[in-house]
Image (tube, rainbow, N blue to C red):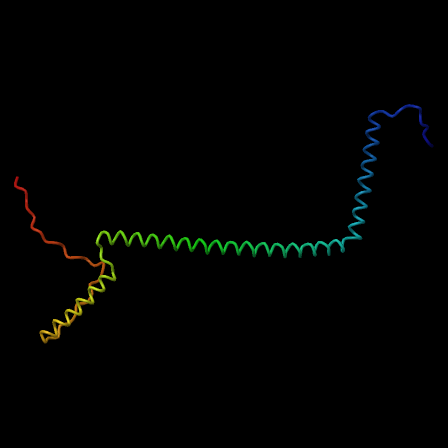
Length: 154
């Protein structure tokens, strides 16, 4: 039996309920349409995504290579700056030691050769077989100076 429609207007609550039913029906139909489309276009979409991924991988690898190249260049520049700083430091230390009159290892070696040569010449003059002295080891203990200590009279 069909219901007769009365001539009355629907209430606000009835209008809201009908709007919600219509909205839910549209959402349901949109979901079914998306499902069907994914089912039919899925393999093609998958292939498209794979191709896009390959392109992205190539660009990412190129960007990584460029970043690595930049890092290596900057590391080389930093090493050059470090070497220059080290050389400046060594030069300043050498000048300071020279101004203080500290003998260098090269000068010490030259003196040792001269002493050895003079020792051989003296031995040749005396007719003896004097042996040259061995070079003193650096960093060894030096003998303590013996001084007489004065005690204060008290």
